[in-house]
Image 1: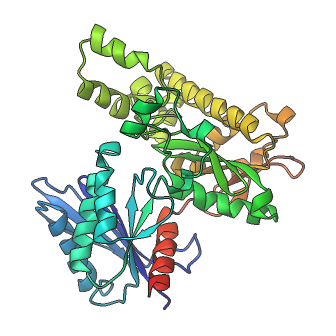
Image 2: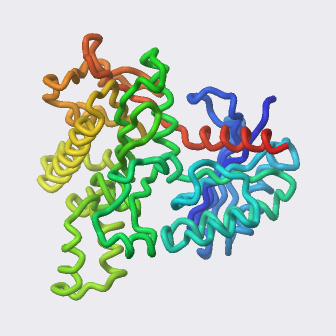
Image 3: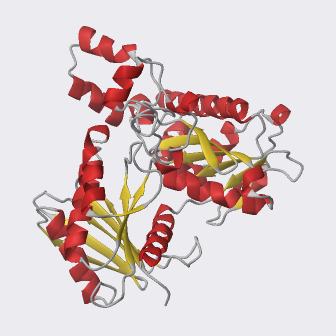
Length: 402
């Protein structure tokens, strides 16, 4: 067996984990995977999938230390834990790298301190990421740990795209700029497009669309991101499952002054009770589709608002790039919702975009083209695999550091 990487994605009340062979194909199943959930609640659960079987244990999980210990115990019990297999590296997803980190980093005490300094930029995400790092370093002290940053892919965006038009001194003092997110996914997918086109990466202009419950668009020129829809936080840009996406900033002041809403209440409204859910009552696109079939007007409106904003970003990035060679859909909605792809690309034949209805309707877990053979702009569906990307970074850096 080749090198194995343990990939950890620590949230505030959960830990997703995978044991990944970085040399495997994107469509292969991970060596093992699982989820620690309901951390801090009266009853928690650890689920492990390995060798075609699913194993579950339930017990109170007061914190991440206990949760990861339980996960490793369950893995060892079934022959796939740190005591049973050799782990070359541990890769950690870190949401925010600020302007400090442009690429993955071997985690040292100094690097961990720098990530901690970025908590004000990601107060909901970085503390949980740090917690997972600290616990994993304690349990696996002799294995290299690598931080892979969601924001890293956007580090080289030109200032015209990265900066907001507010007072420059205020912006500099408080780290206000466009950082972008989902970078690991966008970079992973955009690296596959030149291969599918049979062209060098430096010659390819493309738009990548990561459409899941969270959603973002990125313009990529020659392998480098030149613009992206998310901003200083993941709230900006496209309409999402529960997030509003772009709104007039004055709405925040209006809600505070007119509705008497606190900052925390507005935060919850825009992040958890808006987007598709805010209009239709549901955030899952399968449930939304069922409501549309029942002629639910709110569901139909939510879908149209979603598509309208998506097309706005596609159009703006076509102008920013000047020439587009490919547009790619990825993530849960992008990979599975043929109607979203069709409606996002509708009536764009004058721009060289022609969708093949039969190819688009095909369900597959493989990377594939859904445009017609004579379409000047190629349209692809490429399944994302952030865990595999993180595993590859982690093993590469670990082997290089030895």
